[in-house]
Length: 195
Image 1: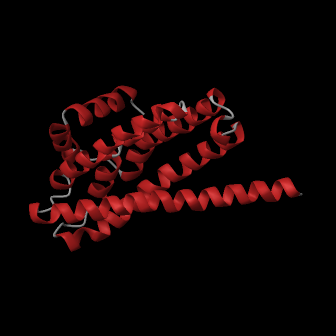
Image 2: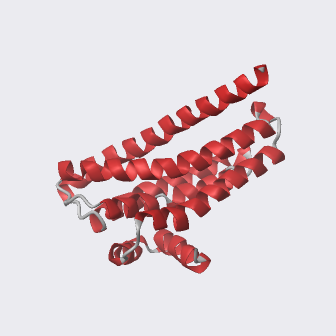
């Protein structure tokens, strides 16, 4: 992982997204490489800041260190799993919106448009009082809007529908995976504690 490349991508996708989407569109990069070199560092930082947040506010609103640890593990699993599932589903929907299927481009769209949401989560997890910073994550919608045209080549008249459906899918997958893994982890902890 090249840290300078990661920082450069983050800065460029936020400050000059149209130019950066052009650069992303012309890149030859494997899907797993994007996840490992771009998403994984963010997700690891989210897990770490979740733990730090648990230490900084251990009993506020019922939060505890064990809750923070569980939340960190869930963030790690759900963060990576939702990228893969979302990219596959968005790619499968492409033809319904006049777009050519291209899994690599769907991965690029999901991975890089999520940058503001990932950054916001990293900072917001440090303390419950920083939760309002998650609003910066809404900038991901704008990045997705730009990327769907530049990377996926979606026709202008189909963009609105494709973006809305895609974001409902992204949000739905994140929630469903979060509930599934939270349920599995909490039920295993409950079972372990009753033994």
